[in-house]
Amino acid sequence: MPLTDSYLERPRGIAEMWGRYLESGEYSDFLVTCGSRDFHVHRLVICHKSSYFRMLCKDNFKEGITQKLELVDEDPDVFQAVLTFLYTGIYETDKIAGSAELEIPPEGSCGSSVDSENDEENHRKGRPATTEDLVAHIQLYASGDKFDIRDLKDVSSKMFRNQLMRTPVENLDVPQIIQAVYTCTPLNDASLRPVLIDYCVQNLSTLLTQPEMASVLADMGQCAFELLRAYKDEADLRSRKAVEDQRTAVLEIKKAESQQLRESLAKLQKRDTHLMEILASHHNCRNCGKVFGGAPQVYGPMSDRVMLRCKACYTKHS
Image (cartoon, rainbow, N blue to C red; front, side):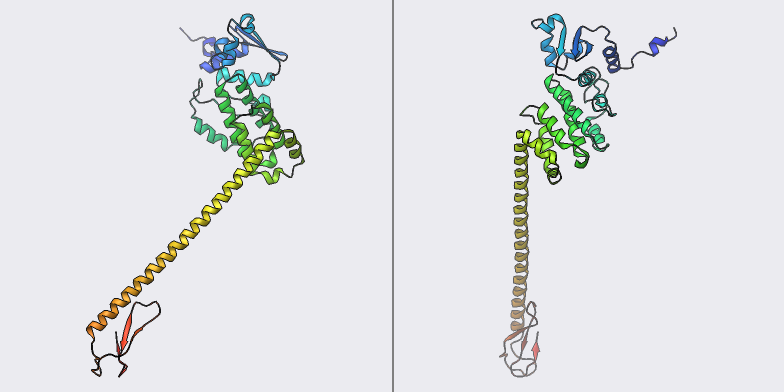
């Protein structure tokens, strides 16, 4: 039986199959309205990695009974990217940021055989980011937090960190990024905020020359406080390192002085031994035969060799 065209054109993997179901809305059993757009989705997919949707789809909630959900504050393009991630495991921000973005399947997602560490390294070596790229990662991170999608939060936070750290501060509108992060993330956020604060501390001298920084820090008091605290921690760290370096230098100097002292003592001991050997073997002058009456003489201040000179005839004995 020959293969039909429809068979040859069918999806090649589960991710592609679910992507087509998302696009067509075929067999959908739940409607999400976001702004002016309707998304015909499948509860089997959206509830799998999101406790938010899993809870709403229960029969004791209005949304579970009507099988409809209206998202008032969510951007349609951002929600489309969230659904794409849930359905296919592909992370994309091109429609949000307005620029092409490499698709990144998270570790363990359907159809993904790319190691997450290699993927992260590839992105670290990629092009510098734009402000729009970083804001898109922030929005997806916020959506991952809102809908409790842990994989989406992990990928978006990694992308944010990697792209931010490899981009020169002159290429970014940092006040806008600060406003986005501190508006979209909770007070106890431990992913985006520390990364952004560390970046600001590293580039503080440049940022302080930007007039917009004063305005955004005045509006975002929490950011100003965390920036001051991070700067203090950095200063304390540098101070401790300087003290440790000084302590190490002093120890090295003392070690060198101790070694020099041990070498000097060893030379003196060798000199005394040599003198005793001369005195034991030479009781009388070999020239005049008289008993030595002179004191030993040293060849040099740091020499380990000595000599005896006869007081009567001045003959040297060494």
